Length: 74
Image (cartoon, rainbow, N blue to C red; front, top):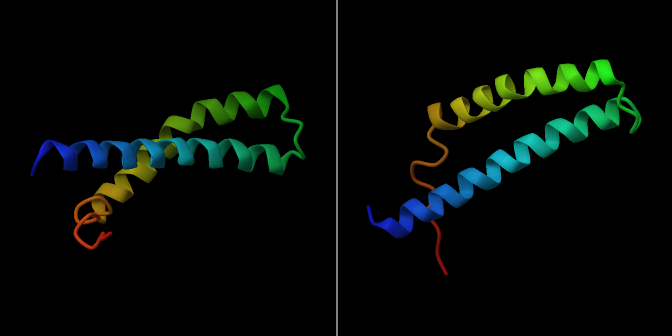
């Protein structure tokens, strides 16, 4: 593999990480109708690392990033 493939993979992983965090926050805000109580906000911040680890672990386990550029074309 060359350095270009590693940089593309890092960008995609970063985007996935951002989207996981954004969706988790948005789900809490929608659940509480855009007014998030302090107790739930604290719970959301405490559970966020668990959600990130589980999601990224599943992505790695099922090989999401392993062959993603194999089928990409111009």
